[in-house]
Length: 91
Image (cartoon, rainbow, N blue to C red; front, side, top):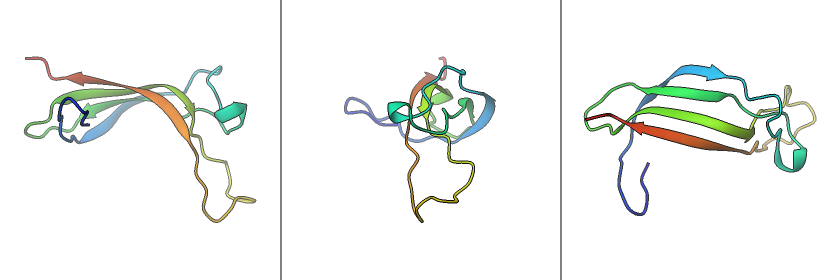
């Protein structure tokens, strides 16, 4: 979680909640894909020096894997895009 301006370090998180992506979410690049992955809320597991306490994954597009690997190549990728909102521990 580092940027060119600041080093935030790493953190450990656990899934606190999830919601299905809205029905009108982009299913994949160029309208081709298996659907958008779920929106998530992650809570910090704890740990000394961890800056962020909550992370949200929202506005997802694509990312859902095919229901079966039948007809797929031996190795394939499923791309997705999302916004991540990170919230710091309040002082």
